[in-house]
Amino acid sequence: MPTAHLDDKFARSVERPSKGFTEYFDDKIPGFMAKVYADRIVGNLRYQPIGSTSRKRFGLGEHPIITMSAMRLEAEKARGIALSGGDPAGDREAIRETRKEAEAAAPKLTFKELVELYEKAAPALKDSWEQDIGHIRRNGLERWGSRAAESVTLTDTAKLMIEKSAIAKVSANRMRAAFTRMHKWAIEQGLLQSNPWEGTKKVKERSKAEENDKRTLSDHELVVLLKAIEKARLAPGIKAALKVLAYTGQRPDEIGGLAVSELRHLDDDALAHAEIPASRMKARRRHVWPISRPVAAIIREQLELRASEPLPVGEDPSGFIFASRFKERKRIARHSLSQAMRRVIDGLKVEGPDAEAIRSLKENPPTPHALRRTWTTGCARLRVPKEYRRACMAHVDDDVMSQHYDAHDYFSEKKLALDKWAKHVEALLSGKEETGAVVPFKVRP
Image 1 (cartoon, one colour):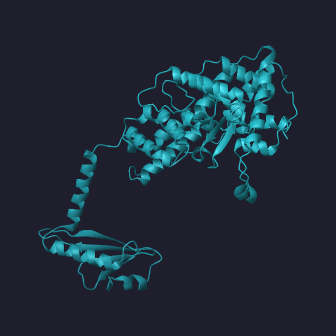
Image 2: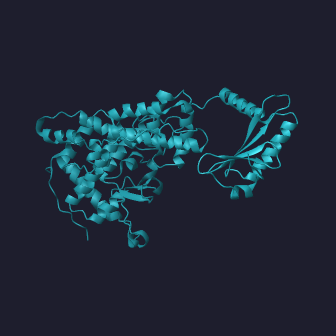
């Protein structure tokens, strides 16, 4: 076996075999040897403990992960321990066993504890964190809450994906994304070693909601849906939020999280508006939308309902306007609105003068976001100028003028558009206007 001075110069100059390895012994430190591979050098110290008849091998690490100089120092240290009657390899193994025993005896982080830790960190990580926590709590706590978080395996997550996708494919994919984000965060924090969701796959099949992602409602469908929502057995907050979506064309998450602190001049028809902070907006820009009379009436009804109920202990009086469970006064999650619309449509019977519209709603069920498309499409039919519609929807133009120079808030223009649509919907619901009728839009001088 060749001999060489096993230092950094050796690592730079030694010939690397294309296959297998070549062993070298150090010229100064007895027992210090290195296996030279094509891509690495593995160091070991061979020694015989005092009183033992067999030789042992003490691993010194790999170059280039550590330098050969560091490997030499480690070899000299280990050899000194062996000459003093010690056993470096045995000591290392004893430390490993002690560590394993300590880890086994230590209380394991439960899945529930992991979720609670993530819930505290989530607001700073993702805007729609409440939706993620909702998916995790609904689908994970009952199954794995008391189990050690590290005991959740790929088999567990794959079974959950199969069960969930059989019911709702879109929801299954969103659930998977939520769990994946939580486990990646846990690994970054050193709470877990692996992510059991990495081996799962998104559901490829597209649901009707995804296939019809440009779904809008006709006037007839909108009237049928709004009347069905009014009659349905839904939480008052859910019912009110769905109606406000239909009247305003705002994003479901923005309406679901509407707070008392975001309302301005609610009792003044000319000035009433909602002011959504940039932190809650998709484009990260403050958004103001005027409140029409029908919407103001819906909001006032919710505020009166809040005032009639005693506040839960610790409840902020400036909390959310709409709630899926009123006494809890938690903000409405997007999935709650989606589920409510689905239940309302599923409960309709294809019969009577509205049979055609009901059949269309059932065959091509709209989502809450479809109410936003319906608003902008309907306003276009009412001849509302495009820039007014864009302003109401908080769509941001990406040209230089819009980004840096045009500071106009379009309040009066947005009010004209929202009032026009509200009057149109009110006329449809009252029967004063036939579905499909178009009233020309008149811009005030």
